[in-house]
Length: 251
Image (cartoon, rainbow, N blue to C red; front, side, top):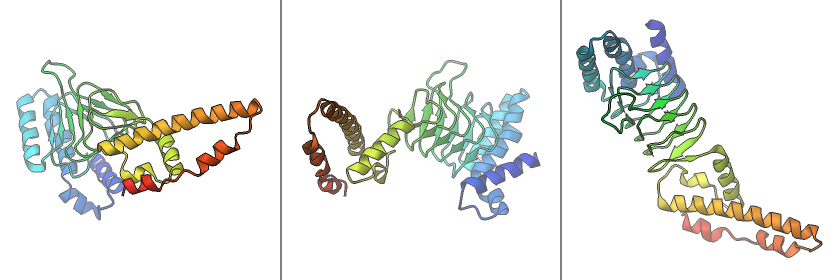
């Protein structure tokens, strides 16, 4: 028990720069309190068939910490709950090792039927504040869920899901957008790629379209050059592109 407690305290120092001492973490971090109470009281009672006592223990933990973890939920090692207020973790939810959950996260169900109703988080998943992960879906290892996202479908390992309903943004998408953004004079991440602002989403779509168009034009120019045509004017036109009007719109 004490080895696991030391492990949980060490995780806080790894992921929260505001932590200043072990005593502060032990006494002032509700996320730690909720996890310890769940592992050593509520979940233990539940697994031994004392279901009512397990639910009562879970209710007391919610009252003390503002974090509701059903006693039947499976929580892995080195899980970190930051702030924690408003977190809800359902009965059949599985939280893998090394996951991080911020306040307002819901691991909820979408059905009244018995059985597996809640999500499964793989190892190292990070879920932003206010995100809702709903249904018996799987969030792959190392995936990231943006703040306030509503996820109702599986998320592949290592990817990022943002928006309502959430859509998956692959590392290749992020890299392509960033490269294209730098070419026209601003960084896509300067306006927060995880925002649900329709203007931000429209800009991302324009960047995707611009990148695809540039690729097609480059292939066309290369083919014309191979056919013996001089394409110097086309290259010069691209170099004269003025990003100032776009930057002004983003101010």
